[in-house]
Image (cartoon, rainbow, N blue to C red; front, side):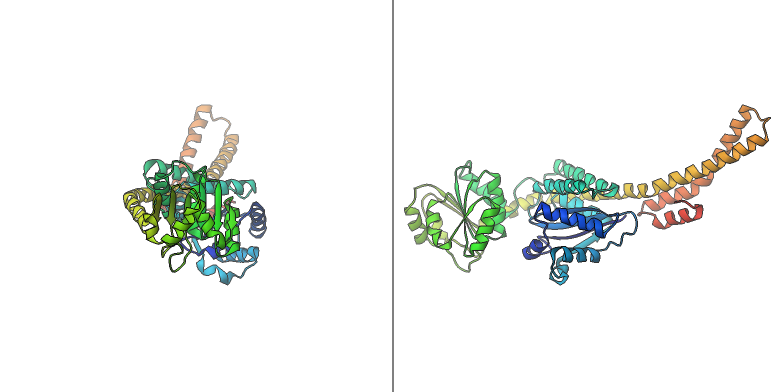
Length: 423
């Protein structure tokens, strides 16, 4: 089974490596598919590139000179970086392991947010883009269509998506929404520009947030995050101003001591309107002194309280994770068996048709020499010869079926091709 995936995810590689290897625009994807098709003739491919993962899937029928190492060289050349910068953080799988990996990815078992639904849309979009570039063939079609079907089965047959299990999803879905019914008219302030802030913004945007300000000590990072999520950057010196105006504050600075204490926050709020404020302190250590939470109409949630809720939800999901893995193991075995049967299907057809064609030619030659044979006699002879051919075909075909149970029977297929001069 000729499948290969080369990948890096939030679990296997740091943000810097993922950013270096990402295909972050349609133009970059177009160029990547063009180069893949030029380098690896006859190879089927799908590129899955998101903020949390970069994965390249390949399938082929004949030796295409494709290997994990050749994909590393492609990535280095395409992104114009040295392979030594990223190779140690890449992973690769081949054969049946690729099938299981994709099934786990699309079922969100491999996601930063366990059970999150976005990954299904991302996989579908990656597959659709590959189709647009004529990069898909029968193997990739079979693999990705099966993966999308498996994700639906996991979603309907398990409770994997029930209960939020990421800090960001709990912060927004369980805590922020317990104070505000909606966020369309709420002013959001983000302090810091790391991964946690970005993930929290994703959930806030899903809830309809429009007014967003990003404050960071690095103006460049503030500008990047604000541009990505439709907000505006603000200088660090304006922090107190925005503390006084914000309805929702998300903070994840990475500072070694609290950035905002009770006195500073109270002074900042005294210049603005008297309205409730939610503070999602995602810093470790804390960015806000716990005493800030004692102020009137201030709802302060730190990373410890959020993490406890995540852990409770994750424990509730543990049984669902095992159920999902059971489905994936079952579906991987079924897909592999189907692929292996198809691997010998064409050869079996050609072998059967070839032998019956030989028998038909010989029967015609015999009937010409024996014109006195009546129709009933001819039919009896034809049936007898057909039974002989089928009995002679039975042992090699039975051996082919037996070997297909444990994997693609490449050795036996090649032997049959050579023995019977099959193309």
